[in-house]
Image 1 (cartoon, one colour):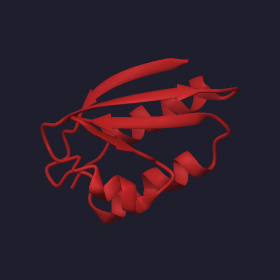
Image 2: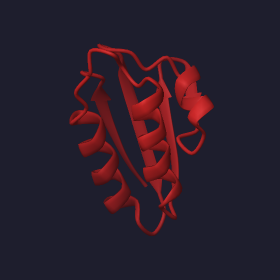
Image 3: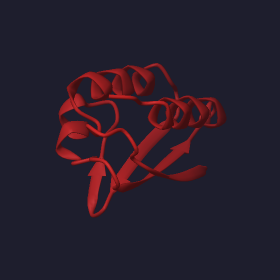
Length: 86
């Protein structure tokens, strides 16, 4: 199991388009992934869960991955979130 904490830097947060892209990354892996934002637990394989997670600019999130491809998926998710622009 590995974990990573990130801050949402995208000015518009994780709205519908990036939520959809995040969901696609999560669905293509074999590991179990959870994201927490404040007191909200987010299922990254559900676009609706991501949108309800209220992941807006400046909020800190924690990603936890556990499974056979945890290293790869963590790298993909962190690069995606950190690379978001508008």
